[in-house]
Every structure is written in structure tokens, then in C-alpha cells.
Length: 483
Image 1 (cartoon, rainbow, N blue to C red):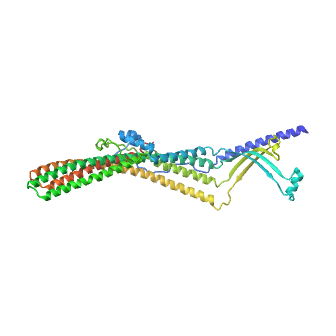
Image 2: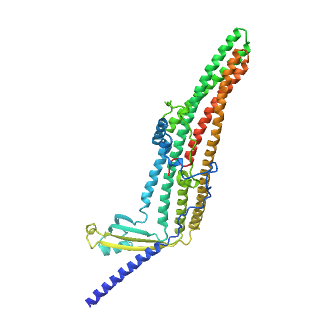
Image 3: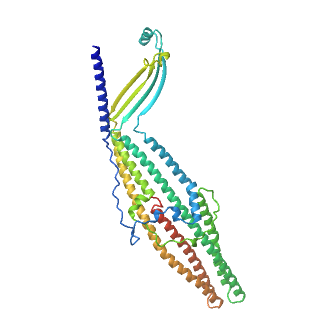
């Protein structure tokens, strides 16, 4: 009889082990039934090459890091300081750290939860209640003690891929934050370079204006001497003085612009507003004639803002998988063991106080006032919105590159014409002064020549700065050195 009972017990244990193995294999097989779709990049309409260039290859200035593209030591120092201390970039870096913490947590989503709980309670029922009478007769006292310590493990079987989709969404959000920080840095480098070139332009315009002011002073003095000699009248002196005053008026205006640009650069680099020491001049910088732009298709992998929008699309796609999985049953398995006793002295009496529990639940949403279905439909619409945003960012990137290429080409032509015009007007000033001294030209011709030459030199400095700005815009719009 005893032998048969032992055989029965062994057989039951074997069946139990077999059932557990079968259940485990079923859970694993069912877990492969993911409802979410794998991400696929949407179709993009990209030209074979940029329209502003006759031919193109894979080489691009975007392959150069910013230190190789901006070779001036003063500009490099400003950019390096901006990367270290600019507050917008520091905030973006902190967002990366926050996203990294979320990624680290998401890696543990598919692991079981482990909780420990210890509790002690005393229940004193009424003496006239059924519970009170039962307690007195069963325990011989009017109160009930209960002491419990339990370790509980719970695990959700990721049958429909909800946890995997949530993990993918978290990782894509991190990458989006990372690409966003790179976009902030790219824009920061651009703003510092643009501000530096603009400051050098203002320096040159201030130098041009001061030089022309000295020329106007000389002409005023010469006109006064001619008036004293009775050759010209007072009107000539007044006109010469008015021209000198117009030139003099530009100086405080330019000095104001210089101070404001210095303050802006200091703030960009995380410093207090103030003067900015520099030794460079605008004439030291030249725009190369050959600035390869590469192929439009490379913008998707080079531009941080475009990549950030694609990461946003991947996030939206993963969230569709999460919302879809929420419509299906969820399987939760929990196991627990611990110690329980009605007396504190017996709490840790093992195995008498030892207990265990196991439970498995399947929850199928039936009626949630269409909440889950609505969340699923919204997630799909948000994914479609992200597709549109991604395509828009690619289109904007191609447009920015094309605009920069057109500007470089046309500003080069303008620069050549402006340089020739400055040379012409400089000779005109010299000839007008000679003719004026020989009484072969009147004072108005000299004043007009001086005014035209001043404006032409100021315009040439502006065109030089615009060419440098277009070069920086091209570098940024191609990706700014990121791959």
C-alpha cells in the first residue's frame, strides 16, 4: 500500500513537471506573436543632384568636422567655448542624460518584479460577535495576532510584444534627444561663426568710414581755403561739411552695432556681455570656389534634425505597437513564499510557518468605453503625422542646401562687380579732386564721388560677409560635420 502511494506521488510530480514545461513552451511560442509592425523608412522624393551645381559626387564638406572647416584660431576658440558653456547646449545634454536613464530602465521591462513585505497585526473583535466568540473558544484569548513576511515575484508574459515595443519607443526617444542635441550644437556653431564674420564686417566698415571721414575732413579744409581765396562760395563749404557730417554719423551707429554683436557672441559662449578681443580682419577670410555638396540622399543620414525627426517616427511606430497590444489579453504570473504565524514566537519556526502561493491571471479588455481602441487609432494618426514631419524635414533640408548654393554663386558674381565698382570710384575720387583743384570740376562732383565710393566700399564688405555666411549655411544645411 505504501509502495503504491509513493509511485502515485512520483507519477503526480512527473505530470506536474511536464505540465509546467508545456506551459512554459506555450508561453514562449505565444510570445512571438507580436502585433506591432517593424519600422520601415517611408518613401522619400529626392533629386539625383542639387539643381544649383552642374554635377555632383559623394564628396561633401559635411564630412569635415567643424575644427577642420573653421581653421581660424580665434573662431575655433569661440566655438569651443560655446560648446562648453552655452546654456542651450548644456540643457540639451542634460536631456540626453535623462533619456539615458529611461533607456537603462527600459532594458529591465521584461524581467519579473520582486517585492518583499513584512507585516504584523493584532485584531481584537467584540466579545459578543461571532468572531469574538470563535476567537475565544479557538485560541483561548480575545484577540488575534498575525505576523507575516513574504517575497513575491510577478512577471508579465510579453505575448503581443507590448513590452518590446515600449522598449523600442524609449530607445528611439533617447536617439531623438541625442540627435536633437547635435542639431542644437550644429546651430550653435553656425550662430557663432555667423556672428564672428558679422563682427569682422562691422570692424571693416568702421575702418572704411573712419578713413573716408579723414578724406572728407581734407576736402572740407581744401574747400575753406578755396573760399578764402574767393574761388568757391560758402555753399560749397556747407555742402562739403554736410558730406563730412553724414560720414561722421555712421561711426557711432557702427560702434553700436559692434558692441551689440560682441555682447551677442559673449552670451552665445556662456559669458557675460562685454568686449571681445580679436586680431583677425575680414580680408583674411575667403570663400573657396569649390565647395562640394555631395548627393541629396546623404542628407537623411547627415543632418541631425532630419535624423531626430526620423527617430520621432520610429517612436510613433513603436507606440502603435504598444497601443495595439493593449487590445489583447495580458498574462500575468505571480509566485510568493514567506513566513506566517499567529504568534511572534513561532514566526520564524521553519518549516511550520513556511507558506507559498502561485497564481496566473489572464485579463482580456471587454468594455472600456472605447478607451483602448481610441488610443490605438490616435497612435496610428500620430504615426502618420510623424511621417509627414519626417518628409517635411527632408524637403526643408534639400531646399536649404539649394538656397545656400544659389547664394554662393550669385554672391560671387556680386562680389566681382562690387570690387570693380570700388576700384572705379576710387579712381573717380582721385580724378575729381584733381579737376576740382584745377577748377575743371565743381565741389558737387567731388562730394558725389566720395559718397558713392564710401557706399560702394560698405556694400563690398557686406557682400564679403554674406558670402561667408552662405558658406556657413551650406556647411550647416549639409549636416555640419555630423555623420
